[in-house]
Image (cartoon, rainbow over the protein chains, first blue to last red):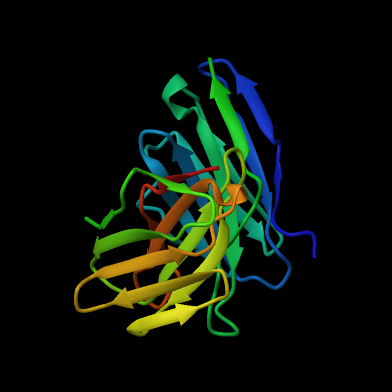
Length: 115
Length: 110
């Protein structure tokens, strides 16, 4: 299995621009998570989906952030408009409850820099 | 809110044993996870505890006391490659919602 795939790996943009981050979960996993990691705040859960349905988006910082999961193999996290304080590494992770331990597997992350 | 506390940094010597502690106060508990994260990389799964006691996995062990809201990760025979951040995470409920501590950055010195 290729693992969780994220694109782009690096994104540099200017304040005010729209940013779209993409994630392909591990095939067969029915949970998908979006996290943000910064030095100051550590790893924060933004939103997670179960069977393509958003379950908890209480971690989404503002209305500027939105996430979608149109099908079981693809999700996007969009920031519009972006701000310098959005600079962070954004991780996507997937898991399944089947098998008992439901370990989350993380993608390589997208390092976002907003100038 | 959910509180998951770990020491920020630790230093140990190659070949030694180190214990990384984690205390938690959360609205729910359905398992505690330890992840390892090397600089610039994604977190990778190390261990999982849901019942009280010690789980041994070769070069490391993980312990949990649910009544005390306490866990530790024990790393044995440290190697330089064990220098990384170690993240404690609590799954809150039965739906895979997981919250992470800030992580402990471990430096292994020769």
